[in-house]
Structures are given as C-alpha cells and as structure tokens.
Amino acid sequence: MRILIILPNWLGDAVMATPAIELLAQHYKDVQFTFVGSYASIETLKYHPLCEQAIIDETKKSSSRLLATYKLAKKLGKFSLAVSFRDQIHASLLLRFTNTVLCIARTSWHSKLLLSHTPVIKKNQHLVKQYSQLAMINRDDYNENPPALKLYIKPKIFDKPTLGINAGATYGSAKRWYPERFAEVAAYYSNRYNIIIFGGAKEVEMAAEIGENLIKLGVTNYKNIAGKTDIESLCANIGGCALFITNDSGPMHVAAAYQVPTVAIFGPTKYKETSQWKNKKSSIVRKEMSCSPCMKRECPLRHHECMKKIIATEVIQEIKNLFRPLH
Image (cartoon, rainbow, N blue to C red; front, side, top):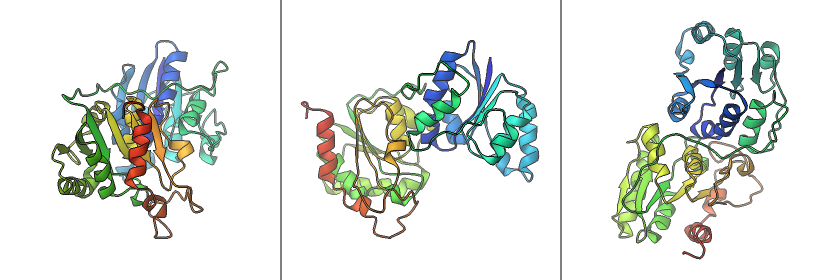
C-alpha cells in the first residue's frame, strides 16, 4: 500500500508527526511511504524503514508554483492514501493533482473544495494528538492513544555522559532563554558531564556567548558544534546525550524521541500543545504571565518577562527532580 505524507515544515512539528506515521504503518498492510516536505523535515524522516522515497518540496522556488506543484504530483503518481499535515493550499493541490481518491487534510476552504476527507481537528490539544487524529480519521479502530515519538537515526555513543545545551529556537527570540543562564546551569553540572553546545547556522553567535561564559566560570570541558551539523548528525548527537537543557524548539522534540532526560524552558508558546510528548524523564520550566502565551516571534511588550523571570537555580532544581535520588 502506497501512502503519501505531506510533512510539516518545522523540524519539531515533523518529529511530532512521527506517532501518526507509526500508526499508519501499524494499521495498514505492506505500507510504503512517500514523504514530501521541507529540507528539515525530509532530512529528519527519510531514514524510516518504510520510506520508499523522500522528496524536498521546492515548488515555492518556481516562477509558477501551481505548475510546479502539478508537475510534482504527476511525477509522484497515484496513491492508496494521501495525508497532508500542512494546512496550505499548495499541499491540498498536490494531493488532488495525484488523482488519489482518499485524501485527508485538516478542514479549510481549499481542502473542503479539493479533497475527500477534511475533518475538524480541535487545536486545544497536543499537536501529536492532532496529527494522529487526522491520520486515523478513516479508521474506526483508532483508540486515540498515540505512541511515543520515533526517529530512525542512530544515536551517537559518547565516551562520557554528555550534557546538551540548546539555547536556540528558530521561531524567534521570544522563545529564547539567555546564554549566560544556560552557561550557569551547564557549569553547575560540568564535573559530571561533558558539555555540547548546539545551535543552527543563525545561532552561532549565541552559542559562542555560552562558551565564553563557561570559560569565565572556569569550565573547559565543552564543545561548541553550533552551525557545524547537518540534520542527521544533530539528531545523532542529541540522541546520545545523557541530559538535555533546551528552549521550546525542534531539538527538544528530537531529545524526546530518544527519551533523553530533558528540562525545557518555555516562554510565549502553548506548552500544552507542544511540550515533550511521552518523554519519561522530562520537565518544563515556565512562568504564568497575563500576556502569555502570546505566540509572537519577539516580545510585543518588549519586556520578555516570561523568560527573564526564570533563573538558573530553578532549572537546576528541575534537573535534580528528574534524577531523584541520584542528584
């Protein structure tokens, strides 16, 4: 059975779609997946053992995206089932142009016009549940208990227990805690763990600032790999960590997929919808604010109190709570 999956664009959202993909693999026989999505989502999920083909959607770069979408659909051909996790008109068009009969996407004006199944999925629940309900809308036997996140990239094996620090968040500065506070937490645990500083190409400066603060605190057993990893090595390195401290971000969900003990710092985002899914050793640190969750890329009130009020000792205490009575 050939199933087409239009993946979410963001790394974290793609990882949160993996329980839905696993449900499809469990409920249908002889499944072969075709994944279409952004560079980040494809590079994360192309290692699935049932992946027949993984295609980066570059139709946005075309002078005529409509025509490019049509050509991509004809290249892909017809499927037994097609599911879009993207609420976007060109995703609906791509499904329709494949001539697949059974096409599923969240309800919208374009999906209702173009596709066969367009359920209303409630948004005030975890995104994993939203994706899973969407994928299973055609199955009467779905019990609404999505499995854990799942990635098929092998985790790296480190010589010594390793603490991962991820101060970045691609969405925007409002989601980012402060480099000096990440450094303070890392320094506290530097006698127990080697330290790896993570970050994307746009977060190199922030990662360097963490390193500078660690040196000021007398810590030298750290490695800064910000901007130096592809998606595969990013996931492998995170998967090998013994502890992960992070903002609400894609790497946070990668850590959850590998069941890495994690403390995540949340500010302006809806933690009930995007917190770590079924990570057995995980916790979040956040402050209840009258203005949150604002879901803005930058603090609209310019005070960033939702992050400023979180101090390093609170994060350290949450780490201790994760490992009681070991710490």
